[in-house]
Length: 119
Image 1 (spheres, one colour):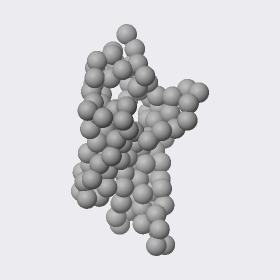
Image 2 (cartoon, helix red, strand yellow; image 1 turned 135 degrees about the horizontal axis):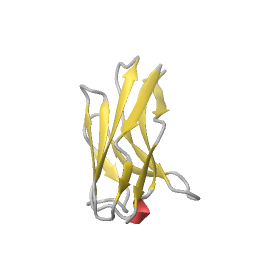
Image 3 (cartoon, one colour; image 1 turned 60 degrees about the vertical axis):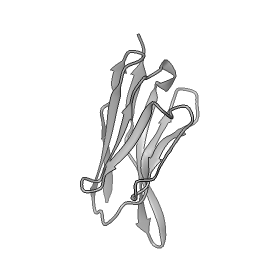
Image 4 (tube, one colour; image 1 turned 135 degrees about the vertical axis):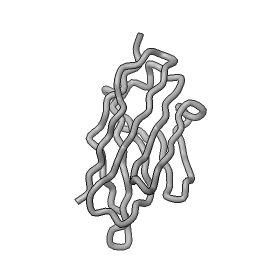
């Protein structure tokens, strides 16, 4: 069984910064992609950023230049550094990780962490 535990959310003023962390634990042999989605009230869940086990990254257009995703493979942890935060970044942020499973991948999700950007 695999668990993903997120931390680092909270309330921040516009222009501020937060760093989210997500640690995977359990029966882990290897992890493929890891990343973050977010879901704001009344909106669909959207991909924020993703990173492969080789370090290739992808970002939503809305966060490019402000957010940075990274990972520590030794710690099975993915991070999201969020700078220049805007009120529209307010959402619940969910981390995910893809694990090899029967020739394909199985996705596990964290429980979500609230990020609120408000003055």
